[in-house]
Length: 346
Figure 1 (spheres, rainbow, N blue to C red):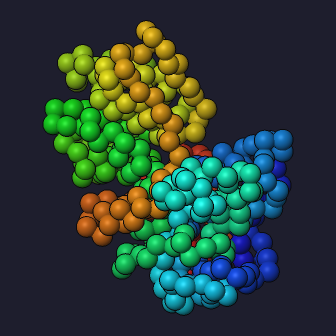
Figure 2: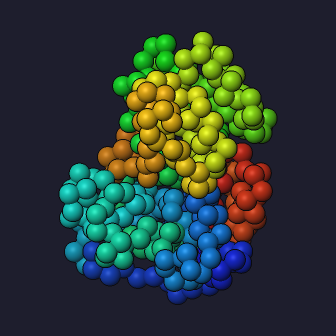
């Protein structure tokens, strides 16, 4: 089969031919319908050989949707032909966090060498992929695969982040989204659907700000040295009850801290390497700073339910598997407006 692999440290990903996978006991083989392109992949491909914690080559793709093609021995709960989404953050299935459905916070994954597809295990940017357990499959329930596949990360991750701050996003409150690309433009929709907050979007590109307005941002502001002052002015000096940074570089993190209101939440989702100091007098009183990771299986089900209800959708660009390296190049250059989706089987 054809697959997009990251094969050499520092090199661009390549489309190669690899053996067709076969499901072992307890595994499910998917014929991949759609696979999402993510900045996390760019981050992985920027690591040095010493920073990589798994061997190459790696088949990319941690967002996946497909049709069940074959079942390994003992598999129940899914049938051949089922259209399903893949829950990506695989865990051991037995620790206390996994028992809560929070495999994104599995306590034994590192110890057992369990890695997400596309981020250590073979991923979805191939004609077929293996899923280690049927519990990691969620029925699509009639959703279009191209529209649904980004929701497994670009929908789930902001949903998990927003859900934590819901008690603070009451009428009269303000939520700020920094970075309105793949995850950020979904976060804006989630905030509009789930809260009464005024939603303010920040980005460096007018194209991204235009997308933010289109999906529901009340205000869209250029993310520059004056952005924090503008948000303070909009809120009468109070600041934002919740700030979601989907970039995570030091300038955006600094902005997030500068605009958080007393008792506000700062949620650092982007993996740009920035950090916000926490201590008495460093931020407004009782500002909470957190750096979440992905989301739970139950939350993925909830995100797909929101999509079926028409409350959230993802702006997508589609590419063939052969054009997948071009999609990554465009993402690296900031030219993807929304989310790129690869169609491995046409």
